[in-house]
Image (tube, rainbow over all chains, first blue to last red; front, side, top):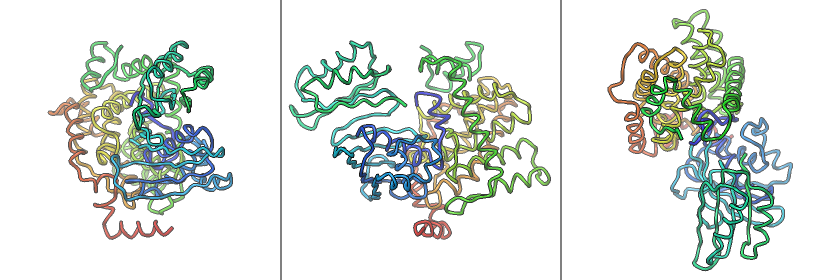
Length: 220
Length: 291
């Protein structure tokens, strides 16, 4: 809760800030991480999402998020039909598996390019969200900042190289988080910044042979 | 850098600067987000406009939610209130407006979550009823929303605003405390009185469970918004009369968090107990699952 507008806001289509607006925001973050509108999404609903998603319109809100609608879009109630018309196939799979947070969603996405990414996140109330996992990497993203996500080879000097490129553009890092599945293999880093992440940073990072995934998510 | 993480800090910052809580919240926001005062006020004004629109839409609403549990009551009350109500004008309007906004929300219409969508009728109900009857200009109403936001930020930081984590005390309880603070600022209450109004409002909602029928933000939520808006007015008036809470607001907030953690999961938005599992609640649930 950093801003007054986390409390008096969002302006949103009802009925639930955590189950409608929060679900939309999680889907929309997942879409940004994928970097394109998905062709196909398998949505795993956990905890209270599994029980109440239909009545809260979480399914329509999730579809709206994948279509790039914002929380105040009056098309949300019809988003599932719109998604179908646009060829976005979404499957909703409520699960009984117990999870740490009562409002957890997981999206298995396949993009039009064939790219597959799994994103897991939680809706923490008032329309605020946290992305907790990208594929199997632990992350901690709120979407409240300019965000850079990289996947890199886990060896010395990479992190310094990435942050050096960022600092050379006079961009201040607010939060950063590194995680890996195994020593010496691939690692994921997420960086949240106070300043706009310019497109030249993206191109500079893409040139590095040690990075196999670079994504910038702009603050909305 | 000025910032606050407790109600007592907020109150003392306002007192030390001979200022109001809304001004402290506004200047902290401007500093933290590096936006101009004008931009921030404009963004809040936009939210006030949406609140007013949902009131107008809701009181004329003659439709129902998908489950059919919610609808028409705001319009029903709107027709009733001028002629028959035993309550005063402000209380009548608070009920009508809170019901209106909440019904719009349940019918997938546009609202401002404050702090959540389930509790979105309480702040506009309390603040706009008072403002209308006392001819408060919009500029002052907008400022009072910053006071409400500041209170919500502290509760969110030190406890929770999520029904799934803390039960309904976290949603309607917090909203009512926020609304009490906003109303009291409109009525010229001191920062310290505002602190007491927050404590009084939240204290009276401690332990409130979240047991919605069929898991929907409908029953008991919509009507509870009407009660909670009036509840906020009571807290504001008690504090304005100089009545103090024995337990200070920050301690009440911590107590609410503790109570939320102790509350069984079945009563925190999972619809596994309480109203949700009454025989009627079950019937509605199976009806909705078969839609």
